[in-house]
Image (cartoon, rainbow, N blue to C red; front, side, top):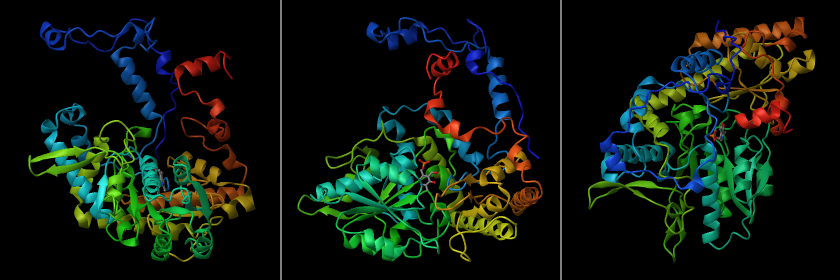
Length: 519
Ligand SMILES: Cc1ncc(COP(=O)(O)O)c(C=O)c1O
C-alpha cells in the first residue's frame, strides 16, 4: 500500500540563511557584454531594496522538494480517478520530446524561418484536432479548457454582433449537469445563463429545453458525454432546435475522451468546440501551469455581404502554409476576430505532448484508448453496484462512457457516513479519491474516472476498499469520521480552506496573517 511520508517541512522561505547560494553563474565575458551591451533598467522600475528571496544551498533545495514529493500523490504512484478531470498517465516518450532543451529555449519573438519544424508540427496538430472533432479549423491559442470556453462564447457573441442581432441574443442555455466553468464563461462573455434540467434517463429534458429556447437564445453549451458519463441521445434534435433560432451550439470537449474515434462533435451539429489537451491527449495537468485548450469551429458564413466567415471571428493565431514563400507562418487576429486572449501564439509544450500522443497512438490506438476507458468504467460500475450503501442515479441500466457518478446517499442516510468520509477512507488506504459533490445534481456524488491505462486489478483493489468502507460504516459509523490517519496531512476543514478570507496566496500575505496584521 502506498503511504505518504509525514515530514514537518517548513516553507522554502523559512529555510536557508542570508548569503547561502545554490548555483554558480559564469562571469559575463567581454564578448557577451559587447553583443548585449550594458542593460540599463530605468530607475523608476527599480526597487529601493532587493526582494526577500529564499537563499539556500543546492542540497537544501533538492531535499526540500524531494520531501514535498514524498508527501504527495500523483498518477505515477497510482490511479487518480478524479471524474471530469481525466488524469491520464503522461507517457515518458512525450516528456523526452516536449522537455527537450531545443524546444524549451525557443523564444516567441524568434524569426519564423528559424522555427519551421515546430510550426509544421503545430500545423499538423491543428489538422488532426479538426479531423478528430469533425470540425474545419482549429486555433491552438487558448491556454486551458475554461479559456477555450471563454474564447468560444466570445465567438458566439461576435457572431451575433456581426449579424446585428446581439441586442436580442442575450441568453446561453446550459444543462444543470454542466461543469461550473460553462456558466462562468457565458456570464463573463456578458450572457444571461439559462439552466435546463436533466431527465431521469440522464439526457437533457427535451421538453424543458423547448420551453426555454427562443429568439433570445444566443447559444447552448453542452458536454457530450455529459458529466454523468452518459451520451446525450437527443443531440441531433437539440442542434436542429438551436439552429432553427440561429443560435450556435458549443461543445465542451472535456469529455471528448469518452467518444474519441467513435463519434465527432462536428457530425452532431456543433459549431464550436474546445479540447482539453491535458485530458484527452495525456499532457500533464501541470498544477494550474500553462495548459492548452484549442478551439475548433465548423466553417459557416456569418455575413455574405461583407464576406465574413465564422473562422474570421476566432481568437489568437492560426498556423498556415504560405505556398508562395514555402514557409509555415502564423496568421494573427483579423478585424472581426475576438482578438488575443493571451500573449503570443500558444503554450507549445502541452501541445507537443498531444502531438506525440496522437502520433504514437494512431487512429486505431485512439479508438482503443476510448474502448479501454469505457470498459474500465463499466467494469467499475458493475462491481460497485453490489456494494451496500451506493447507487447509480440517472440513466439506470445505461452503459456509461468514460466516467460514472455513484451516489453515497443511501450510505449517508442510513449511517451518517458521507461521500467526503468515503473519499477520506480511500485516501487512507493509499488510493486516490474520486471527485466528490459534483455534478451538483447528484446527492453525495462520487464522480469516478479511471482512464484507459488502468488494469482490472487496480479497479478490483479500489472496489475492495469501497466494500470495506461500506462494511465499517454499517458496523461502526463513527470510525470513518476520523479518516484519514495515514496521509501526510489529516482531515482539513474544507469549508475554511475554500474561503477566500483564509487564502494566503503569497508569502507576504501569509506572514501578515500570522502576525495578525491582516484578517
Ligand atoms: C466538463 C468540464 N468542462 C470544462 C472544464 C474546464 O477545463 P480546464 O480545467 O482545462 O480549464 C473541466 C475541467 O475539469 C471539465 O471537467
